Image (cartoon, rainbow, N blue to C red; front, top):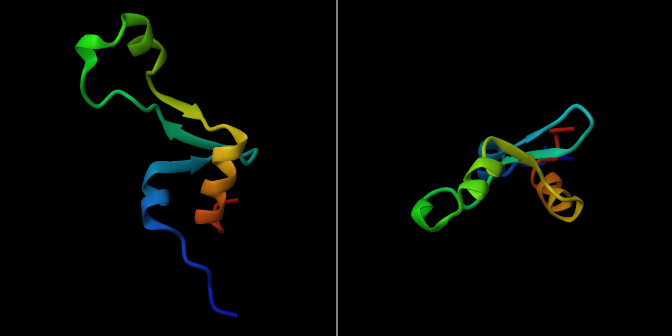
Length: 66
């Protein structure tokens, strides 16, 4: 059986935690910050853990990152 391929776009954007959760950068901070509230900008710093349904999709893209 040949090796499975990892999606290059996924390995650049997501990381797996030691417990198997998927970590990603916060969305919605590329442009248009003038219309965002200060609270939104503050809460959207750093990274976030994806929801279970989104994590399931990303895990299929990264078969060896477990």
